[in-house]
Amino acid sequence: MMKVKKVLLSIGLALAAFVGVTGQQAQTAQAESLKYNVGAVLPSNQMPNSKVTYFDLLVKPDTEQTLQVRINNQDSQAHDYTVETNRASTNRNGVIDYSDHGAKADKSLKYNIEDLVSAKQKVTVPANTSATVDIKLKSPAKTFNGVILGGVRIAQKTDDKATSKKGVTITNQFAYVIGLQLHSDQEAVKPDLHLLKVSPKQFNYRNYITATLQNDQPTIMRDFAVNAYITKRGQDKKYVTLKKENMAMAPNSNFTLPIGDESYRLEPGKYTLYLKATADSKKYKWNFKKDFEITSSAANKLNKTSVDEPEKPNYTIWLILIGVIIILLLIFLIILLMRRKKKDDEDDKHQTEPK
Image (cartoon, rainbow, N blue to C red; front, side, top):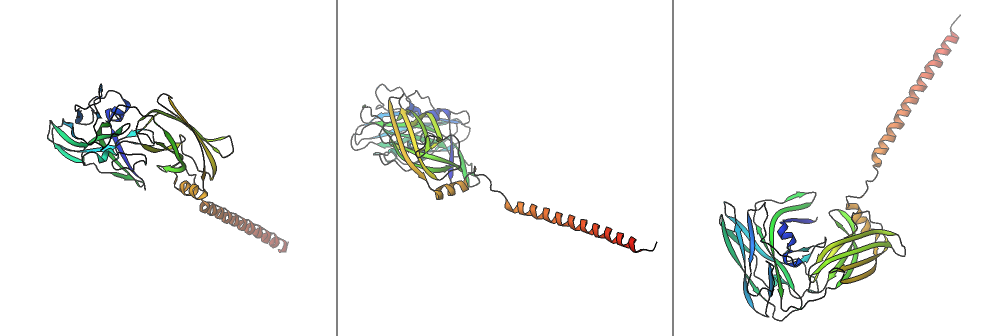
């Protein structure tokens, strides 16, 4: 069964994916529901003219430095925190995500930021105290194009246990992320989009046809929009459509985009996907057309486990109802016949009696 991690990030965190990625000013992350906040201690090699408050670093090849993040515990008791650097990925909603450590990397990724920094740490911060955490960073041995992107994720350790319902595990956890972006020069790189495959999939027990999209360049794809539809092969009628805007893609990443706003029953057959995409205020444009097939076995397998699968008629109940009706009819006929026989017997008796 699927294991789902539900990571609830603060508003400051969510957009800060985020913070640096959107190029907006980022303030020290805070959440009213949490009694701590975090911030980056910006080093001297912050990108020239950079006004952001996340790590946006110009690094030299094969050099080491220590980055620092500050945790401010505003609670009246001590707490433990985990500090871990995660590579930026793209989730199926078209959002850059920093929550998954060790996730499978896209084949185009040359430098994984998780390999360039120190391992996960656990830090105890006393009540009403601030603590500074050191993160060791070693830049790649050679210069590189574009950016290497990740985020320093800080989460307070809690005793909350995961809940399970219908085979789905849900873990509620609050966390902050401070963006970590590395450059070895200031040259911009153009994004490039590829359609890798089209296939039926199921998310949360709902069926979709999905398109796996890839940004194979070391740059963030901003203002990413998709307009897509699917037809049966050789036909014009649109089987399902999707129009989605305001998305983003992490550098050297891919994600599986569900086509359609709602799930549906999969029908076996041959289909064609037409997909148009734009990025950076429509500065970059792509057009794709790809044939694919939904096999009977794939459709049956997914339809059986879909929550939208229509219920099959309960033939047992119908057989029981029919049986009851037949029995009642037989009883009625028997009673009718018995009454008629009794009447006939009485008529015969009256005819044979002396007058």
